[in-house]
Image (tube, helix red, strand yellow):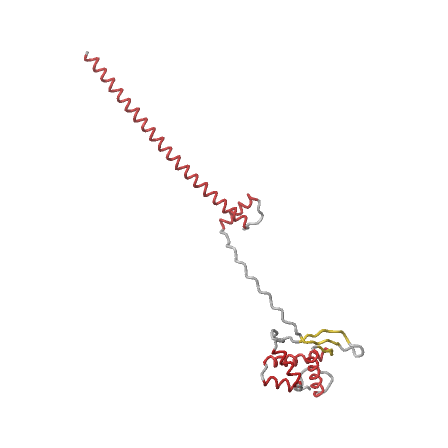
Length: 226
């Protein structure tokens, strides 16, 4: 059983594995790139991230933890200075990169190149402001727009051209209704004037008939008197 012995089996005992991992991490921070077996590279990745996290904290306790792990004061001072100058500040993790090279001749072990990721993080593009939703026309307006669209040769309903055409049609209709109302009013006035003229003519004719009747009566009276 392997009680309290987590991690990969690298073919060595605990002390050898600890020293090997420390030497690999030290070489990675010194050279920014190492060539090793894939299993060893994956095994030291958490240790590298942990040391960079300590360097980001930058306090005395973190510095002592890094020195206890690497056992190299000068290297720890160099790492802390680089991080304090802005290295890895825009990264929240993923400080290493592993690139596969293929299998090694002899034992056929998978080989990789492991390196520190020092490039700045590419910021996400600012999301474009959402376009304002166009007001949905009413059902009646939609039907009118469909009719106007058919008349004007549009294929799709709800386009800007169709709505403009509907507005123009409504304006033309309103103008036509106004003209029709004015025409009705004018015709009503003309009919009223015509009726008044006819009534005046009828009254004048009646009055003329009355005068003629009176004259006839007077003439008859004169003839009888003679």
